[in-house]
Image (cartoon, rainbow, N blue to C red; front, side):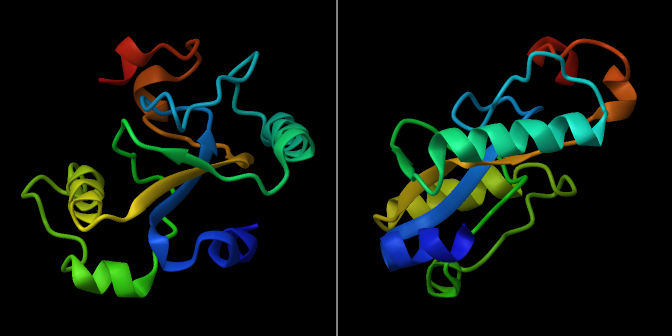
Length: 136
């Protein structure tokens, strides 16, 4: 899927991402009917989304992406100076990178047929239904 996406958009893309179960960004979020931690359940969701969307790419113009999955050309990464430490661990690196690639005219894409199970902030929210307010 990734190779197909690269062939479709080439270096016009600054960042290609996917869908996942636990993320605050509405363009990257796919809320499963039950957000449990059964990996087999999430594999079935991934199969379903691929069957529905295949290798489709959707351009996103009104958002910044979260960095759980970053497919970016090395040439774009080099042009903007790579990832930059924001002084708070990994927090903010993705948002900063996204903003910088947009300033050079590169586009953002989501692959709605590519789904990841994301353990994101599991300890804080273990056993609770996915609610964005819990993840802050």
